[in-house]
Length: 561
Image 1 (spheres, helix red, strand yellow):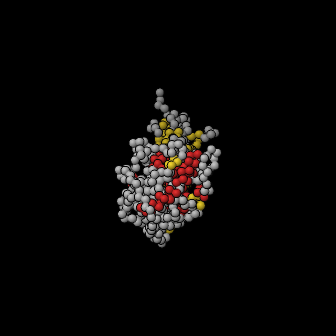
Image 2: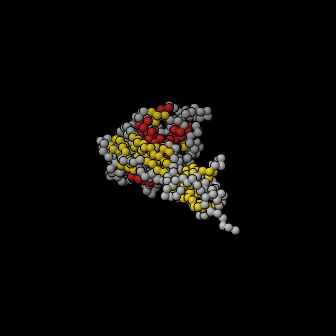
Image 3: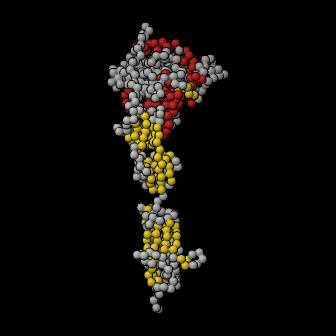
C-alpha cells in the first residue's frame, strides 16, 4: 500500500503546476469565498491540529484533487491561460444524479430545516469517487466493482483497526473507506441508509450512500444554507481545509449548471489512472498573496494529532484490485410487488379516527413476503385528515411477514373523499391507493336549554320561547335539521288538530315546522300561540338521526281576581 501511495505522490507532483494555476484562476473568476471555520475551541482543523481519522465519515482518507474547469479562463486581467476541459465535466451520470436528487427530497421531507442542496452531495461524490467512477453502476445503483480507499494502517494515513470483520471493505485487519461516498465501516454502521428501498443498507449503492451522506451532513441543527454550517458539515466529512476548498469549488461549479449523461460515461478524475482504489493526495493551497504553492505531502494522522513524513518508494507500485464484491441481490431479496393485506372500508366522521388502517404486504420476485422494505404512505387530495403526529406522509418498513400497517388516520373537519396511497420500490416502484371518506357529524342528542314551565291563557301567546341545542358526542352540530310537531301524545305521536300552534308566513295556524340549527348548534323556535282549548299539550322536536326531546305546554285560564 505504501508503494501505491508513492505513485499517487508522483502523479500529484506532475500536476501541481496546473492545479496551482487553477486555484489562482478560480480566485480571479469569483470562485467560492474562503471557507468559514468553527470556533477555535471547536475546530481542530482551524487550530492547525489533525483530529483522529475515525472522527470523520471517510476516516480522513485521501481524495481526488481535480478542480472544476474555468468558464472564463481568459478573463481580462488574468495572468494565466489554462485550457478549458469543456462542458463534459458538468455532466453527472443519470443514476448518480437521480440518487443525489432523491436524497435531497428525502431530507426535505424529514429534516427540512437542514436545507440540503443536492449539489453539495454531487461535489462530495466528485471529490470522493469521481461520481462512482463515472457512473459505473448497475440498474439498482450499485457499483459494478468495489470502490475502496487504502488500508488505514497508519502508514501515510490514519490508523483505524478493523471494525466490520471485512464485511464491507474485505479487510479484516484495518478499515478502508468504502463506496461512492467513501464511508469507513464504523461510520456506515451508524449512518447507513436504505435509499433505494431494496431492504439493504449498502455503502456500495449510490442511493444508499447519498442518503447516508445527506443525513450525516445534516447532523445536529445544521442549516446548510448558512455558509458556516455548510463548512462545518464538509469538515466533519474530512478534516482538511484543502478538502473543504476543493468541495466548495465543485459545489459552486455544479450550482452554475449541470446536465445528465448516461451511466458509465462520466468524466473520470485525472488523478485516478483508471485504478480501482487510486485517489489523490492533498491539493495545492492558495497563498495569502493570491498565488499558489504546492501543498506538502500528506502525512499520517495519529490520535494525538502528530505527523511524520510519508514514505516515498522509488520503484513502481504493483497493486492487485480487491476481489471482494458485494453480492448481487437474489430474487428472494429483490422487491417485486406490493399488495393490499386486508384494508377495510375507510370512512370516518369529521374529527374522529378511522376505524380501519391501511395494511400492505411487500413481496419479492418469487412472490414471497419480503421483510425490511420501505413503504411510504401518503394522503392525496384536498383533505385535512392526518396520520398520527399530524403527518400527511409516513415511511415505514415491513416486518418479517412482509406486512406493514399505516399509522392511525384521523379525519379533519373537511368532509368528502380523498386518496390514501402506498408506494414501495425505487427502480421499479409499485403503488396502491384507496378512497377514504369523511362524513359530516350528525347530531345524536337534542336538548332543551331551559327548564321553565311554558303556560298561556286560552287565545293568548306563550310568553317564553322554546330553545334547544343539538350535539354529537358533546360537540355542537351546526345546520342540523329539526322537525317541531304538536302531537296528540307520546304513545300515538300524531299531529294534534287542536291546542297550541305556530303561525305560517300568512299568519295561519300550523302545528308542524321544519327548522335548522345555527352555527353553534342552537335553535330558538318561533312564537307559540294557544287556541281556546284548555289542557296540557305536547311539543316534540326530532332530528334526522332520530334524537328527540318533548316539551310540555299548558293552556289554562288565569286565576280569578
